[in-house]
Image (tube, rainbow, N blue to C red; front, side):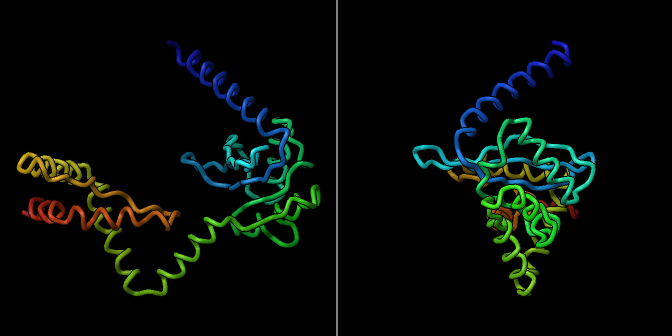
Length: 226
């Protein structure tokens, strides 16, 4: 039951799964899906994923790991990608695509990651991540709509008042339980949820939860403002 033994067992399982994924990917061409981010410890890391197609033309996207990087410069990220490919025995000669966000270090025309990878494998065509492009489009649309901007601000304030207060969230849960006991046939929707900071296209869930819980939220304000 030692934590060292448990960590070793988890590591063995992870390596076994990783070897199996690489075994499936290695005979095929693949595309790079990478993004840099800062983890909860405020350290830079690189996510490394691959998109590939098997002989039956089925497409797969597999996450292969986090890689710590000292900084997020293009040269550092390229070195991390090359190192990851070497460790996994996946030659860049089989790379046929790259998908990154639109940051200059990733898609810069002169020395970005995509440009440098193309220098190694010219057939690794780069593209701006479609999901990221969609998020940017939605963001631009909302900032140019006063109605949408006000709705976002209102939803954000409601979520902050509830989700960042264990007391208020507990009271909301009690109110919902009481209402369920009063009417067993009335299906209570889930409580409010946080607004995603980056994934704009999934914020609809947060907006749906607020009107669905309107009566409960109004009761919460009545109780807490006494």
